[in-house]
Length: 125
Image (cartoon, rainbow, N blue to C red):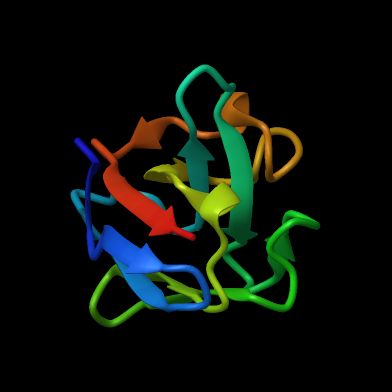
């Protein structure tokens, strides 16, 4: 069973930075794609960034140029480097993963089989 555990969330002032990590275990797939999603109170969960098994990266327009997704295959850890944070980035951030070929757009929650419990990011103005 694949398990994902996020860490690195916290409270920061606008303009600050945070680095989220997602430790993954239990993979049996030869190909794995992963992503970061976030959900603010009263809003739907939205895709923030995704990385395919070949390393191709995708970003939501709202975070392009500020966030960077990366993956350390040796450590089986996914990262999200977040810079120039804004109050509207405040949300619970979730790590997601899927095996094989991605079944749908990278930002679609239905494309992922496994989810972490989330880590809270709060940005104050």
